[in-house]
Amino acid sequence: MFKYFEDLSKLCDGIQAQGQDGKNIDIKTAFNLSISAVKKASKSGKKIIFIGNGGSASIASHMAIDFWKNGRMKAVSFNDPAQLTCLANDYGYEYVFEKPIEFFGEEGDVLVAISSSGKSENIIKGVKAALAKKIQVITMSGFTKDNLLRKMGSLNFFVPSDSYGFVEIIHGAICHCVLDTILCE
Image (cartoon, rainbow, N blue to C red):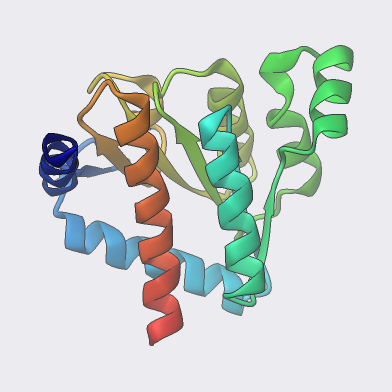
């Protein structure tokens, strides 16, 4: 048990962040930029959109609820079972985030794309749809440093681990940190 928490602590210290240009950003600056992006979108009446699969879908849903209920911001996740199965049936599972972002996304929104592997096709297509609409993208990934998602956002958080549990815990903590910092201001 203690080793688990020691390993988790080391990973928290090892979180990496990059800008769209692929250059490293210190973690404090990355958090501040994320906080600024969320606050700017919220003050402008825009949305914070969360997407993810599996455990990352749970994080996306949880964060969307916390951001709107606790943070009083427009926030949504596209993880409704009927919506997912409809879009997967009609278009293919790789389009389940692209299609709602194309329809509901607006310039000035912020998309938080969460994928442990950073290579889920539906997340990548969702990010591309967001970028086409001039939506600011914040990514959260793990596993391999060269995953595609890590190169797509204006801010990209990376957890250097191949453990779903560790990556998901830290992704959730990053989201909570952004919201809790805003709530404490």
